[in-house]
Image (cartoon, rainbow, N blue to C red; front, side, top):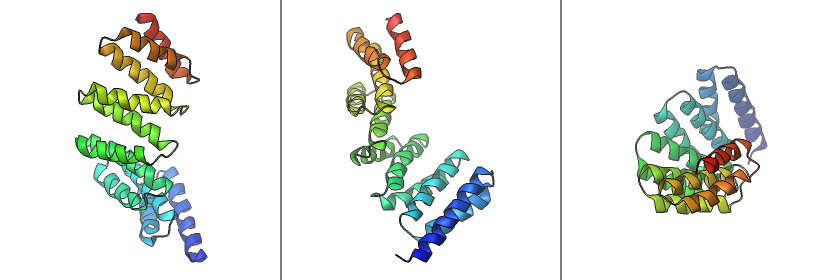
Length: 198
């Protein structure tokens, strides 16, 4: 790869990030697009992912979907995997639950240390909204088994709430105790409140 092209793409990406931070959305969008069009890997997928996040922030789901779809062309990269996960939420917001599930499943199978457990948590929540408690339970258990410091405690809390709703107070208690014992203060506090109310 031509180092001059890489340097130029990185410089433009940095400019896009600065413009976004300054609230200059149009200029940020233009700079991200220039980097994406350069096809310089691994910088182009970073720009596509960032552009997707910007479009989401602005409420433009169509623009977000297009940007994430560009990023996932580089599935082997960190931003490509993150784009799969974010695209799941875009599909979910658009009411395409099958598309959301496909994206979350693909993100889960990536084995990315952060994205995979987050995708399991998202799959569990999606299954709950669709009235599929066993699928939700399986997804939450996978997220818990990851021992991820952020997603595992949230999954334990969600599992407790699911089991409580399914009239399984003993299982709910175990899940809440697990969530309460974690180092995630906000999750632990809610879990303790749930335990006290059982």
